[in-house]
Image (tube, rainbow, N blue to C red; front, top):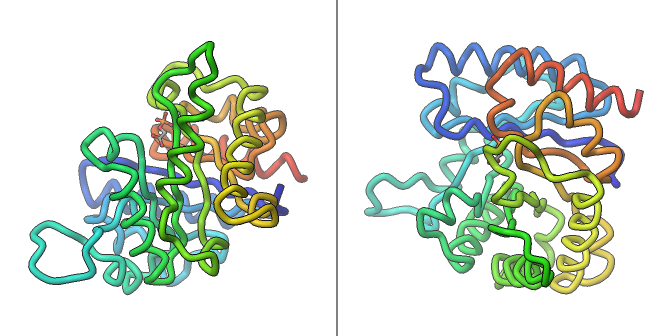
Length: 255
Ligand code: PGA
């Protein structure tokens, strides 16, 4: 496990207004400034990215984007390119979120998005996760394939800017997160699958996050017993009282 924790807030299609986005971002920056061992990434919708940053952001606070175009530039209506995000001081891009995969992204498209993000100098947070857990253990093979195919064509020199977020789909937007013991097992498996692509050393170094119904109550347990490097947080990242408690709980693990 790395020496600092990483908590990524995926705001999804929230909040409804610019004013609210500014408020959440300001609050998140202030919370981050109080943490000693934790890096915080806020991923607002593209429309609010610029407003979420600040010249006075603490060093451990960054902005991420929820997706990036597979195109570099040109006549592509509605698309937002990696270079544009970079020019807005974005440092991270989420790729392959299950909601985007459900809307049509194949592993191949995910690998193109990752490629664009990495080429622009950004760090890619690559989401993987099974729809269901089967007694036969078929989800292991599924995750392995998803990692291999999503990282196809990515050159080795960029591997240090790849983070894997393991998010079992059945635990996203659900009542409960995956039990920490299972998270531990899956995080080891994800590292092994990453090592199969980029070599044993890469497997030891890659950061693995867990996502899926993380809240202030379960966050610490997931990191301590699930032995992950951090969390990808949906709903709780725009619920300020909860996110505040979550960040404090994570930072307190090392205190
Ligand atoms: P959730 O979402 O924390 O609301 O379950 C997680 C995610 O989809 O990244």
